[in-house]
Length: 161
Image (cartoon, rainbow, N blue to C red):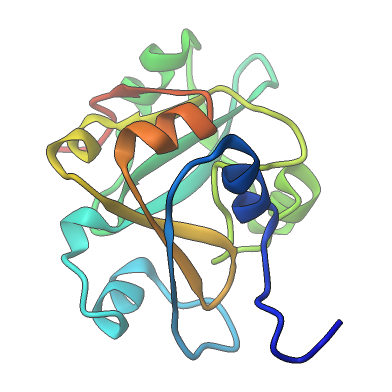
């Protein structure tokens, strides 16, 4: 591989294969940093920057939630959105095993398996939102409807008020 070849994550390859436009933004980072810090590093509105969280339902099934970086999940709303009695966050040590991604580089596009995915409804308030590209130090700027298509996701109001 030549040194000038751009790195493509699994998420980018999937978007390319679907003909979906996106922009890549990079930032210097060797380890996990929170989403607010990423938004600040890239000079982005935090309301347009979304993080991806993975939960497990009472049934044992996994569910993916995408929400603004400054917000927290409302677990009751999340459970209702996916038809579960309850959901809880998976352990950090299980992120790679479940998703194929690492903490701080998880995205809803191109996980090991296609899990039911819910994007917070505020994403639709913007022409573009920013999500992880599937690698620490890389973000994607994408139209919300394109994210919904690529992640086979739906929107619901899933954050704590």
